[in-house]
Length: 73
Image 1 (tube, one colour):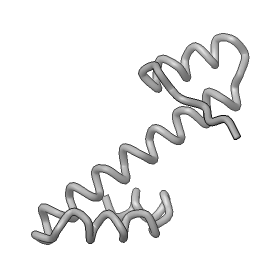
Image 2: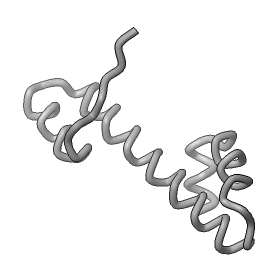
Image 3: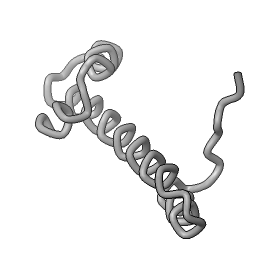
């Protein structure tokens, strides 16, 4: 199995994909990037706010849906 590796800044990659007519790729790139950013923010906020170990918030954020992460933040 071969994985797609993003070697560019995701918003720029999405813009390029959009301009080239690859609309689904553009949406998926932005969606994946935003989701990863939100998860990282929740890990940081959860660790600092609740004064917990980062590894404990890491496990919890991987089980929460993107919609719920957005609501929490």
